[in-house]
Length: 48
Image 1 (tube, rainbow, N blue to C red):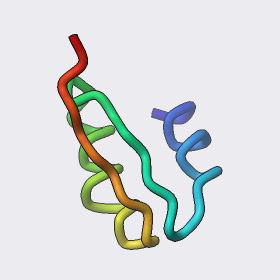
Image 2 (image 1 turned 45 degrees about the vertical axis):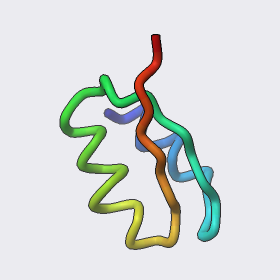
Image 3 (image 1 turned 60 degrees about the vertical axis):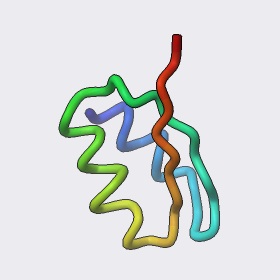
C-alpha cells in the first residue's frame, strides 16, 4: 500500500488512470473513494 500510495500521489487533479479491476480491496477503496476527492478519475477494467 505504501508503494501504491506514493505512486498515485504523483497524479494531479484532472488526471485519469486506467486500473485493472482485480486489485487489493484497500487499493480499490483508495482509488474509488479517497483519490477521487482530489479530482483524479479512475477507470477499472478487466485485464486478460
